[in-house]
Image 1 (cartoon, rainbow over the protein chains, first blue to last red):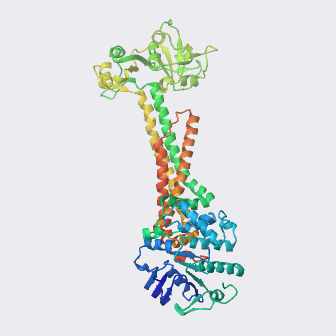
Image 2 (image 1 turned 60 degrees about the vertical axis):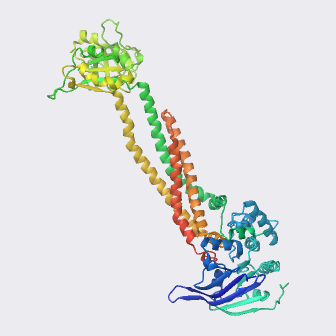
Length: 234
Length: 403
């Protein structure tokens, strides 16, 4: 079975004077079932890496394979379809539809797969149960706390059962206790089989995950398995 | 839970049409206040266009109904000019000759006595009224009814009596016959026996007082040449009859005879309105374009505000086409709402105005449909630019927080 994500010699250069080399010759391979932390100071290229891994941006050179498929060959429609089916995103800013119920927000994660509404809502309810919000399907996001909003965003990311979940600073807008709970939730999902990459500048979070990729100046500085220690480890 | 659909479609992003519509109207449902205010912009344009079409169409329908009522088979014969440019006269026997035409059903000759009428012998203010000599046939031919008293009776003995046209009665200050009013014509007193109702086809009669022709001859001594002959023709024979009349009235010099149809003047009123209608329609069009610009404006703002949503939609599988379609549908729906609102408003204005005028209400359905269609088209066009902008957004940029 091929790895969930493979980056081969990926370079991303933004045209400017002088050109900005956001990523330089990055190689990364993530197997199914892994949970990886990507850490680094701001400007180290971790956001660019996230966008490339999520196919929201294309590399200047190099190969990005998701589930064994080379994304360079895909049209906008197929690439969008790939994101819809194989990738799940959790953003720092949540980005929920404020006027729509929690259930419908989660169901949006299946909207672009052409599934009927009742199938989307049934699977959305299941995803809400997985994140511990099975009792609040009708709540509007504006009535919920930050932690609950992030749980809805996570449910939206997992509803399509993607091969890979990309979480960008998932605890960035939350206080420590709530952030810990969100991280625990992600770890539980990982324990249930989901492959997750967490982008963070927080080394404490990184320390709780089994693998840490450290970025600096557009390159991978270190890529190693870390011993799971600390209070939140399973 | 399975992902078989994924394998089946080999990862092609697909949005069901009903979901596209729901997605395209989500933004409108989320901000009802803004939606209504923006739609009103379009509604004003559509309402004014529908009202202009409806009101002019109702007014025209009313005019045509009036014409139907008055009949378009009335012709008027007057002396024209001779080849030397002098005023010609109609022959004395013109009426008798014309009455022999088989398709003429009613005929009446009128002679202008070329004198003035006053309230009393001391008054000499010009009042623009004419004095005509005519007989009972005039009442039949022009279908004259009276608001007070009666028309001249052929069996009357020769008495100094007079019937007033509606405008003449007003100018002479006579509205009823209770006090037995009299008028002075050529120094003689005449008893008013009747006041005629207005004649929409014959405003010249409205501005006249009418004396029986025998009375005119005996009391005033009149030139026997008629100055105007009115005739009713079988409606279906009108076109064939009309060219024969000049030659019949004056076989010697037919080109000195003028034949006209009084209803033509009334019909011309409908045509004159056309210019005003076009002007008003153009104003409505301007309002519509302004409404369209308003939609484009609101859509541009909406796209800026919803960058995050757009980014997330791209991340969860929307293609650029889906984003574009979403915003075009949003703009078109907004405009269509305005169009329907405006069409209803325009119909209501037409109804109220026509009711006030006592007209037949005629709201052209094709006008309503065209109004809604125009709104939809303007909305779609107004949505194109913001939608293209939304579709071009870099999703990676759009999901970044706080921008």
